[in-house]
Amino acid sequence: MGRRGVVIVGLGLSAALVAGATLPAQAAEPQEGTLDRAGLEETLAAIRDAGMYGVYSSVRDGRQEWDGAAGVADVETGRPVRPGMRHRVGSITKTFTAVAILQQAGKGRVDLDAPVARYLPRLLPADLGRKVTVRTLLNHTSGIGDYVVGAFPSLAQGSAASLDEGRFRTIRPEELVRLGVAAPRTGEPGQNWSYSNTNYVIAGLLLEKVTGESAQRYITREVIQRAGLRETSFPRTPVIPGPHSKAYESLYGLIDPPRDYSVYDMSWAHTAGAIVSTTDDLDRFYRVLLGGGLLPRAQLAQMRTTVPVTDAQGNVLMNYGLGIYAQDLPCGRFWGHDGGVFGMGTFSLSSQDGRRQISLGINLMKYQRFDDNGVLQPHPIDYALGDHLLRALCGPGTALARGTTLTPFPTQQVLVKR
Image 1 (cartoon, rainbow, N blue to C red):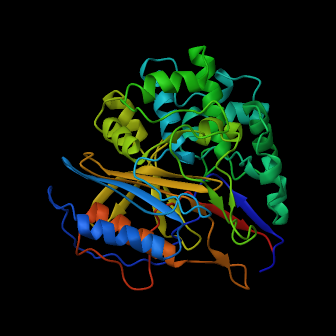
Image 2 (spheres, rainbow, N blue to C red):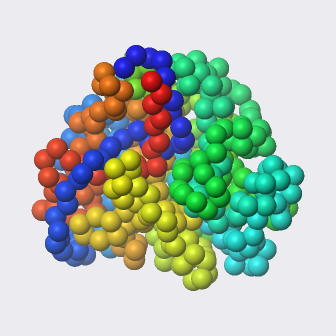
């Protein structure tokens, strides 16, 4: 299709589209001690060989750990990517924000089923404020639209101009909410699931209201530090702190060659997607969370109460809880989230007991292309990502049918207007 009419919605990633993936019906859960280091090296290198600039991955199986990297952090100098590089994790921030809200729920300061207007009486139009509850914010059933196209309006015309114009712009969260409310509603509150970053900006403002401090400060102290994360933060400047890769955005071929957006004012993502972390820290975060180290048992159970998320054909892509989702693989159910910002993508999944984990980052985004009918086509990178994910979580001997792939990044949302 031509350049006009491509609209990118959300902070999710542009990877691993799936249609009719065939999974083995009976696959044994991997046993502790089966970490396939050679296979992980091979499948990680295959992601690079398929066209990804740089990729890094941290895998854990019980007490065994593996960290790997393949490709380059800078395409001009050839500087290699390394394990442990800092990385913008996008919508994985939502899990951190949801934990903070649920901590307040555990203390009786937030009622998940109370209307948002109880806490923020003048933030939303009256009808929304009375109908949208805290729970519908956290599980994306509020019906409130996404603000991203409003914040970057050139995307609606298939242009990247807004991305460059917004590099050093600071945008207040209240303005992001206004843009989201002005976008078309996706349904009545509680009616259906529709991913919206606006929900988590509202959640951040609600957190500030009930705690009396900035959301970033509270999350840093009560979530990041309590989980023992040393490389995770809300950066105070547009620069990623510490060793990091560049962040290359292709925007489905609209930016050719892909452009680096690693220096960027992330106020546009706020509590929906502004955290920087490492793959090791993400593994630890989900392990501590799922093990009960951040939430009381009742609130952790609420977090894992899900609604189904389906594609246009009715296939269930995942089951979304409160800032966390479940994906069912041949070897069991895994919990986590994915995230994407301009030029960087991340996913993190953990078994329910936190024993088997993978967190992975990539530094080239929206590398796929549309066909002449406006349909986004899978890329070899997508298949390679799925193979690495399966090898990490399910071990050797687990494979998909030829021509199918997993969905490591199911919160991706792409709207195509002809």
